Image 1 (cartoon, protein in one colour):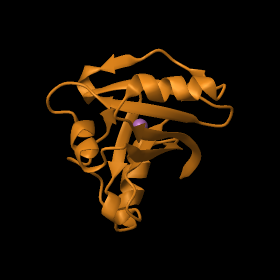
Image 2 (cartoon, protein in one colour; image 1 turned 120 degrees about the horizontal axis):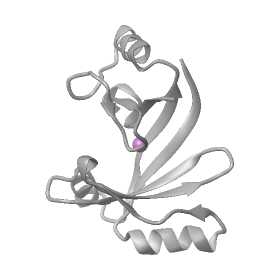
Image 3 (cartoon, protein in one colour; image 1 turned 180 degrees about the vertical axis):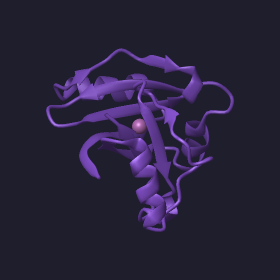
Length: 133
Ligand code: CO
C-alpha cells in the first residue's frame, strides 16, 4: 500500500534560521509559503529522493504551536508516505487495527492532494501522513 516516503516534516521555532541552514548545506530550499487552512508557514527542501518540510506556526490555533510548546527546540512532526488510493489506505489502516485522526475522511493536504493521518499511538509514536499521489 505505501510506496515512497514523500516527506519528513520538522517543526521549527525559527523558520529563517532553519531554511538558511539547509541552504548552507547546499539543498534546494523554497521561499516560505503561508498555508492558512493548515495553520502553518512552510518551507520545502527538495532532495533527490524525498523532501523535508519545515513547519512554523501560523495563526492562533496552529497545531504546530502546541507541538513547539512541548518541543521548544523543534522536532520531527510527521512522516508522509505515498499511496495510490487514499480510500483504500483508509480502509486498510482501519483493518489493521490502527486509527485515522479526525473524522477519518481524507482532507486536502499541503500539496493539494488528499491526505489522512494515522494516530501516533498506533504507529510507534510517530504521526504518519498518507498522501494520494
Ligand atoms: Co505533511
